[in-house]
Image (cartoon, rainbow, N blue to C red; front, top):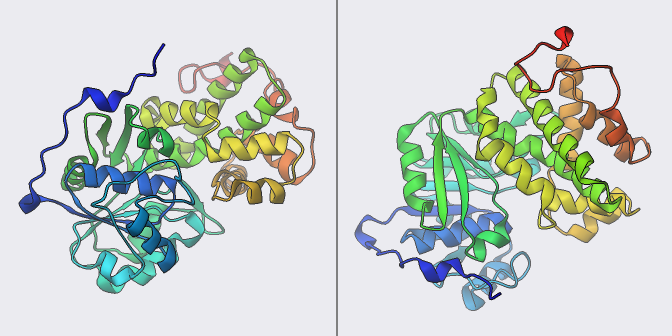
Length: 357
């Protein structure tokens, strides 16, 4: 059967340059590049900021991000720049796709150029040591700006290939939600709205933990029953932790929760899945990270969430088992076995109290 090309089934977007939103994406990784490319297709005046001037110039000349998306041609209207002030000043929306360990530093650098721009995080991670989420960092470093977070089951290569996908823009500002939907929503990429910023952000960060576990399990050829148990108990862990952090557990029934969890935990395109698979295949953490060549937020998230869960007394057996496997040399099958301990527990979180089982 011939491969279905969805992009052939939709009409091109009519562009009105007079009303085009001015979008900048900070960060030239795979997902940031995919979002920038979508914005151009939607008629937005779009720039992407990349630290390396040579890499930016190469994208402008070849219209290919050779490091992260070498198999896809970018829209010719996308402009890559390495000047941070040029990238940020007088724009409408700043989409920040910077790894969590550099996120705060970049916001400090752009602060002098921020006036009325909305700032939206595309980063799914937690800042080491502070346990700050990206929205926390935006509020701390840019306290006056309208902000939001974008998260969902968004594998960059599938988006670039034109496969139908969806995501969630979460913001307390209706204007921010509408503007991001206007910039990115298309026939092949649906952008849903939410006002649960912390819940959407937690879903995007926490699912990386379980993608590492599923990648490791894939290396050991675990069965479908085991995969299903890990996935559903992962959702229970995420919900328990999120409620302690003030999020709405119903958020995890949507794209940014179970949707992102399913995609990230089942696809070899997922960076965290790849890290887990490499670890399960016998590589060290350093070897797996170097082979990946990109940031996999899940490893740092395991460390941060385990510590916070212990502090808050949240039951998270998968996260604990992963930490023991990666950092304390426990056998990888500890992850599955951890779910078989601790006696009887209820199935669906918040429906039947565990002590009544």
